[in-house]
Amino acid sequence: MSKKDTSCCSSGSGYCGQEQGKRQIIIDFLYLDLSICERCQGAETNLADAVNEVSTVLRAAGFEIVVNKVNINSRELAIKYHFLSSPTIRVNGRDIAFEIRETSCKECGDLCGDSVDCRVWVQDGIEYTEPPKSMIINAILKEVYGEHSSNRLADERYEIPQNLNAFFDALARKDN
Image 1 (tube, helix red, strand yellow):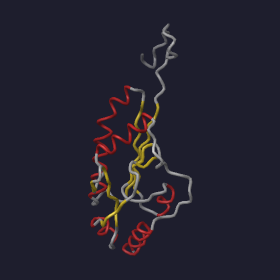
Image 2 (tube, one colour):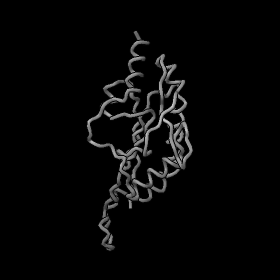
Image 3 (tube, one colour):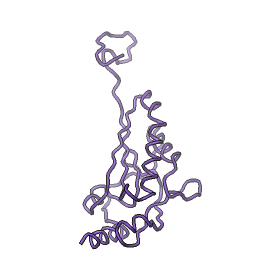
Image 4 (spheres, helix red, strand yellow):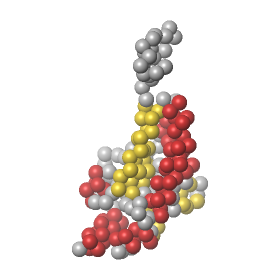
């Protein structure tokens, strides 16, 4: 039934004359750099591929996917988004990973002129420098089907992690 259709049905479904309301899946992609950081670029690519693969089915099931890409380029943005590590992907406020692990990231180190650690992703005991597409898809489907984990962004007091403070300090020194 189209949005403009004003005919009524007798099915009792409650959809007479209107389209079923879409439920939103909000995905936040938070990152430090997309220009040179291979981890952030890989996360962006895998996120786009994952969303592309599930979007047709989710639309048919009454869901709309909204992707917000946020370049965390200041302490203020880090605080606003409770940013813990780059890159981060959250589905309806839930981080797609249960833990945050980091290793040295040459590209972000080159960007700020100092040593920086960026996120690595662990799936089935294997460490990846970009989130596996299957990890992203599973996180989206868990949100849709209500299999929530406890990794939702809490209202706890947030402090910028030392690693990010070092990144922003080094970036400021480099810019001066």
